Image: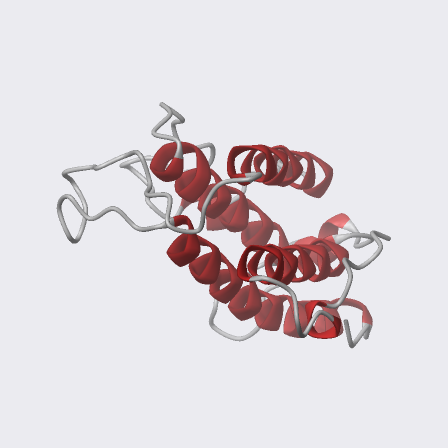
Length: 174
């Protein structure tokens, strides 16, 4: 299993960039650890009426990383990996041939890109992309906003992953 990133709560006097990046790394490491080591059946386990699965969550977070760091922050042409206009929630609809190892590898590529793209960047650096087809046309969030949003995304989905993992094999905790 992946080792957890250092607990950011142990850095109470860190500067803002160090603190935000460390919280994001911490949640990324928890999320990946929750997804590792499950069988093919376990990564496709659904609870209740939700179509949420561990495999779908990993694919979703891959799209989230890709969207915020490649498309928005760096303004790169990076088409979605798992969804399109015919299935906007395609990240949550894996095909029988899709696997967790492939999904985790794709997530790791996006995380590695995000780390490189944001290394040494000022918290006030604005996203380069100004898409017109968005909820607030012309809105350009700062790196600070993106990092806080990514922490929120991972924290929320770590909760989902906790439930799915416990249902799959009984594992609990970070």
